[in-house]
Length: 350
Image 1 (cartoon, rainbow, N blue to C red):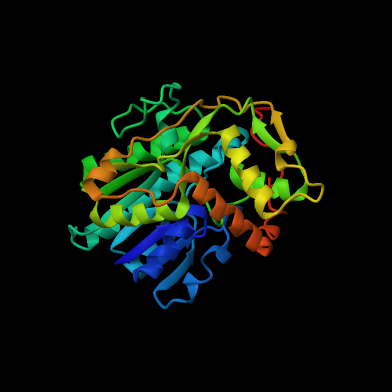
Image 2 (cartoon, rainbow, N blue to C red):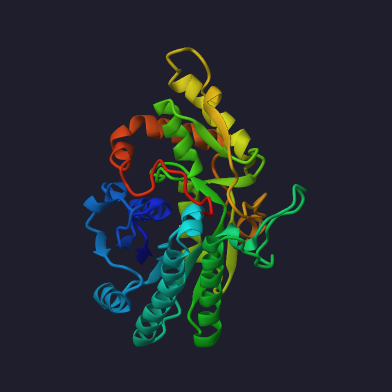
C-alpha cells in the first residue's frame, strides 16, 4: 500500500512512517518542517527505496495537488497539525489556519485525486485526531469518552481539531469520500518534541531544573505509547470500517502528579542525582493553564472488539522505555533546545 502521511517528520507521524516502512509499505512523507518537525526522526526509514519526502505546507492547495499527482497514494494518513495546547492559547491563528484550513485543503486535494482515479473503493482518507475534542470528564472512573460522546472542546487547539473532524465527516456525507477517523489519548515515547509534559520533566530533571506541574497536579490523562498508537493507526487505515471512527487509548489513566513521580523514580534508578537525593525534590507547582480540562479517559471497546487491537505496554513500562531513549539519545534532544518556545512557559493567557 502506498501511504501519504502528512506530518511525517513530527512525533506521531514519524512513528507511523517508521513502522509503515518496516512493514513493507510505500510511504510519502509530506511535512512543512515547522518548529516541531525533525527529519532525524525518520532517518532510518529514509534509507528505504520505499520512502519519499515532500516538503509541503498543507495550507498550500496547489502544492498538495502536485504531490497527489506525482505519487498517486492508495490512502492518506492525515496527522499534520499544530498540537500544543499552550501555544494555541498564545497564538490561536496558526491552529485555525493549519488544523482547519489545512484539513480542508487536504480533503479537496484527496477528493480530486480520488475522483480522477475513478473513485476506487479501496482508497481511504484517515483523519487522525484527539480525545480533547470531547472536553472534560468528571472524576468518576466509570465515565469515559466513547465514539458517541458529544463534542465539547475547551481550548483553541481542541476546537480546531473538532472543526477538522466535522469537515472530514461532511466530506464523507456530501461527496462520498471514503474516510475513517481516530481520536487518541495523550501520546508519549521516543522522539517526543521537548515542549510536552513528559520530555520537559525528563530533560529538566537531568539539567537540575524545576519540574513544573500545573495547578495541584490532579488533572488526569490516559497515556498511550506512541509506537502502540502507530500500530493502531496502520490497522485502522487498512481494516477500519468505512465512515467509522475509533477511539484509541492506552488504558492507563494517571494524574499528572502520579506521572511525574513515576518519571522521577525511574530517573532515580537509571541516572541518580550526584547528591543522592530524589528528583522529586525538583517538583514545583505552577499557576494552572487557563481552561485546563480536569480529566480525559477513553473507552477503547470499539477498536478492541472490531479490530482486535490493544496497547502492548503499561504506562510504567512505556515510561521506562521513554526515559532510557532520552538517556541514550542526547544529541537528538540537544539539537532541539534552541528552537522557538523550548524551555519557556507558554499559554499563560497573558
